Each structure stands twice: as structure tokens, then as C-alpha cells.
Image (tube, rainbow, N blue to C red; front, top):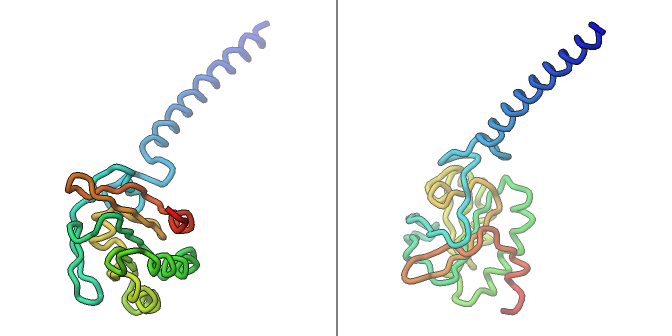
Length: 180
């Protein structure tokens, strides 16, 4: 009987220990989330959500034009791409075709190519005729202002009472290209 009592006490202690370890793991998961610790900058940034106000930003396009939140027309598309990203290379022709078909011409699409200038040349060459193009290093001012740390990312911007607002974080170019 003493052995049975000892076994039950041991199982009870192990259950309490397991419960405490599980609570500790849950606390860490809440702190870190699925993509690592949530920080203001760098991996784990909280992306802009639909309905959120687009933060102020300014940048200089490769053609020398100043680009800012206030210079974006209603319905503008902002695309973030990196030449080091395989999905970006695969989506580039689709983005070029989509931007070419956009009403309002190249002023309605802003492409932010993230990487070293030499490695961005192909993207810049293909996008310049259909979009305003900004080149910046990873973690640059546009990525930081618009909280982008994953590529490709596209944002659709709408004006609402003189405030530019993000209406969709990830824009499906194929769906968007269908008749409106």
C-alpha cells in the first residue's frame, strides 16, 4: 500500500511540474508570437492592417521625383520587392503587367525595390516604365515607415476624408486585375 501511495504522490508532483512548465511556455509564446518578438523595427514588425492610417513618409524615386503619402493618388498600389526573394522574381512580370494596365499610368503604382543598388538594376529597369520606383536598403525608411519586413508585400491605398488609409495589406494582383 505504501508503494501505491508513493506512486500517486509522485504522479501528482509530476502533473504539477508539467502544468507549471506549460504555463511558462504559454507566457513565452504570448511574448514572442509565431514570428519572434514583436518589435517596432526589424523582423516581427506588426504590418499595417486594413483601415489603418498610412504613416507619413517621403522618398526620392530613381527618376528624381519626390514621393510622399500626400503625392499618392486615390487607389494607389505600393509594392515592396527584393531581388533576393524568389517569389518577388516570380511575381515581377505579373506586377509589371498589372501596373501597365492601371488607369492613371505610372503615378498610380509605387514600387519599392529593397536591396543594394547593383542587385536592383533588373527590377528597376522592368518597373520604371510602369511605376514610380524607389530603391532602398533592407530596413530602409520606406520599409520602416510602412512596417514592411516581408517580400513581396503590396498595399492598396484609398483616400478617406483627406487621410490616406490602407484598405488591404496583401493585394492579390490576379484578383485585383479582374474587372471591377
